[in-house]
Length: 480
Image 1 (cartoon, rainbow, N blue to C red):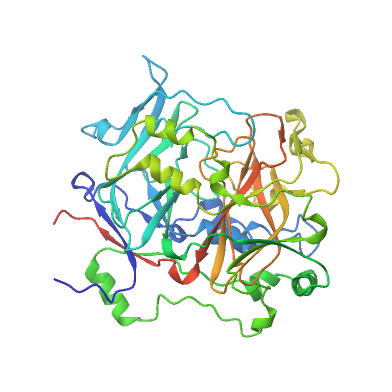
Image 2: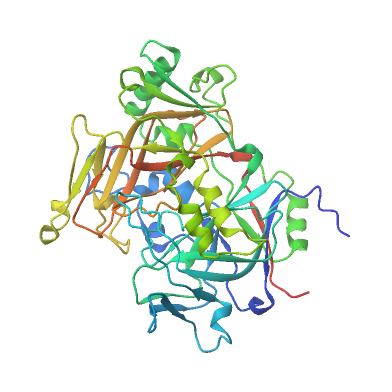
């Protein structure tokens, strides 16, 4: 038997017998970037000012999230239409598939009627991905909808799956809201980010700071740098993340790592900065949410993500009969929803549009100091299939500081099924950068007017230890 104990931690994707040589394997997200992002220029002459000219291509948190982990692909073409006999959606696959039930199953669902931006809907179909997923000991697979891709045909259910101990073909629940819909073979249907469970940070300190405190002085120091140095985060604070790579066999993987023993190491040195330059952590704290003292009593504090789950949602998922004994899908969905903390909107935000007058009629407002700003469509480029896109950047008063080696993954709140304002995701190196949390999001076309309430979930903040991010995957596309 081959000794694998000295190999770098890696994923293993194993094809089912039906999928051997026929269905697209999972692919590193950094190797499967959407065309609009690849075509996007780093700056645009349509905007003025050195800070404003850069596009989302130069937003490192946006790009890091987009490129993280692996993409699960649709195993074949799947068409969803109205079911002729009941309220479920009907799924069909090409006639070359011997049994469509082997690929996708559907079921009727009575959706909850909830007010607000977080709808907490239920899936109505399950896709058999045709692949088994095996993570190293101690790792779970965080499964989320394809990140920052503005998918509107369907939404995959977020999961935190214990794929180190639970084996079998991975089945992905999805919600199809509009029919007819065609998902083409090879389309991304979910994104997998393996997370080492022991590295998750719990119970952060929630604190405030005054201008003359150590934290206040450090923030002033960094804000001044950010004002005068173009690309300050990108050029001086950002840490490159390991890009994913697939190997077609375990032998090929071993050959690679034996030739490049240090290839898994991340670049995490900042020669121009010293420990005293890093944001301030109180003694014995690994994770702190900071707010300016004057706002401390006025804004909602970050809350454990589990407190945002409505009563009965877990039971409703379990009643659908998703998964098996070895794949407890409903539990995995709840585990994903409980990761990290939710940052909330600190005051009501009213958003409206006038469809007859196009993008210029998009408008947002709230009382007092604005906690948002609109991004012009040039920021995301004309090649995006939903351009011109109405993008609203929502701010909070909270900064996040973590111990050295940690980044914060800001996710669209998992399984909230955001309705009117749908957050994008980003990965911020919270050990060096202490700016306030701000999350851009797309104003969807579900309505022409909406009000996001105080306390609405803006983003879900999940800690990631950079050295524990996986770089390699072995693809077992054979039946031996």
